[in-house]
Amino acid sequence: MPSVILELAIRVATESGTPVAVVDEVVMEANLRRMAEFAAASGVRLRPHAKTHKSVEVARWQLALGATGLTVATLTEAETFAAAGVDDLLIAHPPVGEVKLRRLGALAARLGRLAVAVDDVGVASMLPAHVEVMWEVDTGQHRIGTPAGDPTFMAVADLVRAIGQSRFRGLITHGGHAYQAKDDAERRMVAAQEANGLLETAGLLRSRGIEVRELSIGSTPTMGAHPLEGITEIRPGTYVYADANQVTLGVMRLEDCALAVAACVVSTPAEDRAVIDAGSKALSADLRVPGMTGFGIVLGKPHLNVARLSEEHAVLTSAGATGLSVGDFVVIVPTHVCTVVNLHPEMAIVDRGGVARWQAIDARGWR
Figure: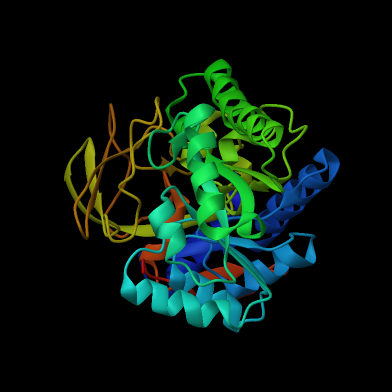
């Protein structure tokens, strides 16, 4: 059980009030180094997804450890990291509409290297002339993207005719359906779909004279679950802090969880029920992993379940007595850390010496 983050979070909560997000910098650094070493050993470039941390400080740490650039989800993230000096960005979300295209044009003018992920030739044709394109392939998540194989070949052939070969960087996919895996075998199957879908499609394109420079896959749960031969780039994000989803999937350990939310018990209306002051505005309401029965893991108190979230309340339940009293602190590893980071305007980062500092969430927001 990760007693250090538990102790750190309670100390910060005592001094600052609750709810509060707390990061153990030592654990975070270990996570950053482990993924950087994995990428280097696998012979792939690491382009971490910065939507998890939304932090200039963490981004600089990732780049210092060898990341080739960053992946972002929003133009706000792209603008924030560009302003901080990051010169190589991939926007993994189609920028649709006049407002976003105007912002993209201003961004492209200041960056050395910029690409966006799209699955529509019309959208690609509207992009500024010096922005490169990554074509999204659907390898099983069924979100955006064209199916692997012939459908993507035909779409990319149209794309190259519309924008030219030089602006087509390559293929991108996200094995997000790994979060639905019921066991390790299913997770490895998703990882194989993610990588093989791109490899087979790239082979088809290359055999017909279309150059494919980059094959980019993402998703923390699929890292290390399938050989990466032929893949050029990986885009994991959640690995930075880890969360209850990763623990439940068996991808990361509880002791790898660097971020937790401390909350205070405000009511004990029944022996088997307590209410805390961290609801859906402080904890993730994302329940998408099989086997995850509550909205987080209560550290040091495995008998407790985060059963329900309201906006400013969470209900903790237990098969027997909760053992909690009004005024007690609890520390929760959230289900999905990316959404939690975006909910908090700042976090307490506790360094190796036990000193806490406050860090603003630089790229907070969703636009």
